[in-house]
Length: 112
Length: 113
Image 1: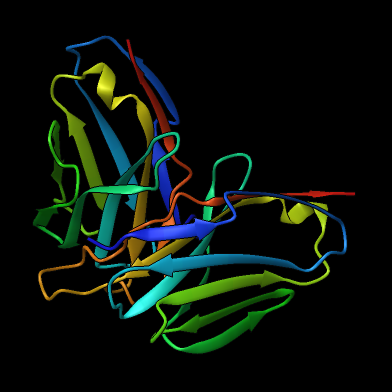
Image 2 (image 1 turned 60 degrees about the vertical axis):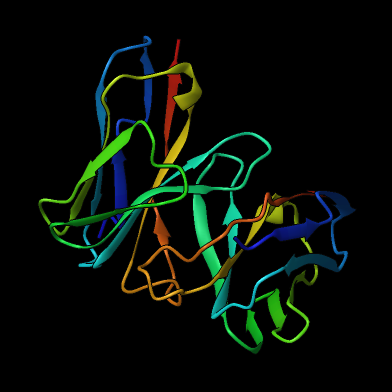
């Protein structure tokens, strides 16, 4: 089973700050997902990446497969970025669709 | 295009009662999943399906049954609810396996007293 560690667990920052959330995992993977869970509970997929870097608006995700590490960055943070961010490495064993292991999440609060 | 929907949104059960949670998706996805989310823990996979008529166990399947009679629907059943099944349940779907984005439903908050 893939062990997933996210850091920090909680982060409070001021509007405009650059945010970094880290994710480390123990088993080699085929892809890694970053998810956002809104205060109301809904979950949306932000990124799925298997190498390098992806950018979407103010969000940037990077992954280093050799070091088993991924980061999610938020530039020019805004209060609407306040949410729980979840890392989910995906490993396909050939046994079916079950391949995601979810981190416990990073609770981010951006204060105005 | 509604995406993934779940019914009901909230439910309170007494120990021993049964219920079925319904998940529906309109994206023609092959893969569907049921997860539970508990405080202080990551999402955990209960059961999943790789296509109509097929289901498989995930990480925490005990106490639950599932069915996928139609491609767009994935049902999660609790035959005899226990307080340990108090949780928030999320359904998700994807085009293919884990290398594809998963789309989540809004969740069902279940309390078993």
